[in-house]
Image (tube, rainbow, N blue to C red):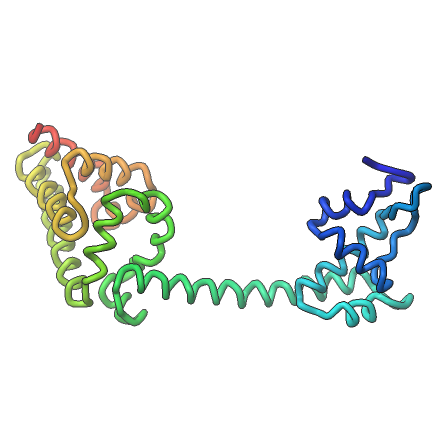
Length: 257
């Protein structure tokens, strides 16, 4: 509820700014943020200028500056709110950059523990080229983390070494090469040869990661053309391959029904 001149009570400011009533009382007691007015009943009332000052206080607190130092910064007629905001923006930007770097470091450590892939970044790029498995780790967990397939994949890959991943990559490249060759020869996706390559891909997933039924493989095929990132991967190999590969997987699944 707004009061005289649009002022807010301490409880309203608490909810608005996410600051406890106790903290606001403390700021008042030490003279850091003294409300501009009081109600007839003696309750604190905060004006717009009080809220501006509170914003300054909270921004400085975010930078872990002690209350006494904040009081000194805000005191006196020489205080320049715009200059202070620009300084706070610069300091917070630096803090955010450090935080992002820390988050990235922790995510890499978590992924290493989760997958068991104990490789340096150089080794990772050596094995996977431009593809970084860690890039999609969070998304994969969010979408499929509770599924049996995800749990089984995590269990299996936890044992894989660099040599294992190199072998997997070689198999994948061979499947891609075979599919591209068939496309170059003009072989349609429902040709038995195309379906055989699609079956090899399904069995590779089944062997390396989790039991992959034909129905599940069809679901993956739909993602290959629905998700631009997957589509781009296949299009780099051959123009039109994403759709061709999708159709070959569906045809292979149909012949096994």
